[in-house]
Image 1 (cartoon, rainbow, N blue to C red):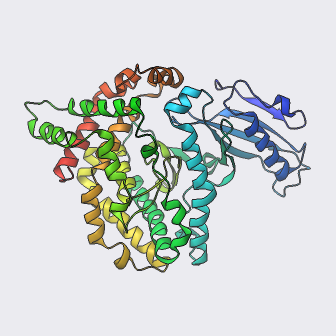
Image 2: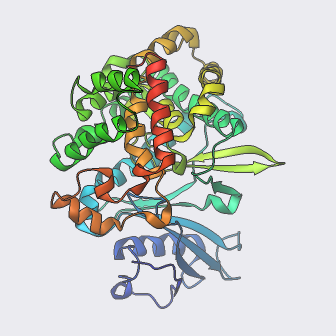
Image 3: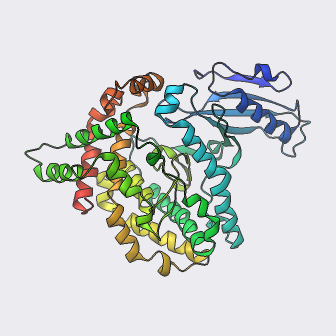
Length: 441
């Protein structure tokens, strides 16, 4: 494991036998691919590079993220002699951690996003002669990837160099943050809908991807953990003094296992013709923002490892219920839905489709009522993580070994002590109350 120190390499000194770097999770295959990319870009022996750990503890669970700083020599073949900063994302090498955090399939899904889906979205929009500042382009630049097991890697631009930052998840998002996020998701989903409308054959294969959670439905440890989340949510309420909410929530949970309740909402056929390719993992740690002139000017969507074909409501409710507070939703929730829908309709028009035919306000509102409960279930999964401070995040390799042996069956046993914090109780209670007050369960 890399402990935060920097490793420096000159490609003149590297050979294949040297490529297993013991204090990083970067495999020999990934380092070889990096060398090939840099050789082709700058020329052999025309650069040096450093590797540093890029994220703090608690920022990323399915992978390990490194920052690579490339110092370019003056005689490099590239016209641009400026230093280059890259991000390389790799899965953990520990087998138990790979299994418990579903790292392999997650990386295959994200590689599919960068290699197939996002280029399709870009080319389709470009074919419509849309202005660059009106396109959905809110994702990092992709350079290369590897799919081979235990050598998976994704290399992309380091958008921190462009001024993007990760918002402190313990500080509330502003209206500006959330409104911009809604507009971005509106463009993303509209592009899927327009491709389905005009060139359905181009998206057919992507419609067939199996949801990550569907792939793990027979995992007994994950099922046990998810079932434990029901009690965690119910324990946020006093059964006697808050009986209305406790009984409503308990009645909903009694309809089936957590997993079955979730899969029914994630299932895409019941949402047709509104189903789209969704970002998937839409919580605050997977979006980076940029500030200009004291305002929120731009954002980028990261981590496409749970990309799915499903209702657009999944992305919206995941983000709004996990990453905003009850106080924010009380003031802005329906306005945010309107901003999202207006953005989607505007983008559909740019792309040459008729929103009144394929994404009417009435259809959108009906879909919200049908699938909105997913925000509750996804918040139940992510809030114990989101509310655990970085220094308190458990060692993920030890945790993975415990789960493999069946020793961690709830959030507290797993080490996500945020599940016992005041902030977790307030956030979880707010999610439950809103879900019930809005008539979603």
